Image (cartoon, rainbow, N blue to C red):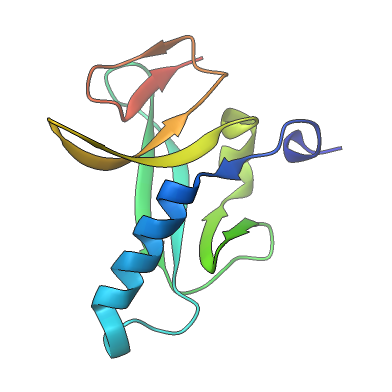
Length: 117
């Protein structure tokens, strides 16, 4: 049983809208099937950091999350750190960004992209 079978990773409606908006802005320049790749890397102020980038291909062991036409892929190594998380997009006074609501994080950095478990 994988981590996502016991605690699925979800995408908020806000994140789906933003991914679709980015793809629409890229128009014909965006390759068909482009998706947001979310990964967890070692490092950052709190021990681990989130990485967001766009990808044109999906690896065989990637988890694919789809909502309203938007797609997110997560590599197998990152799944255990993200189990039960929601990938969101928020607009606040200090800026707008993708963020992870991660129930596994015991501490978060003020930057919002770094966490510890």
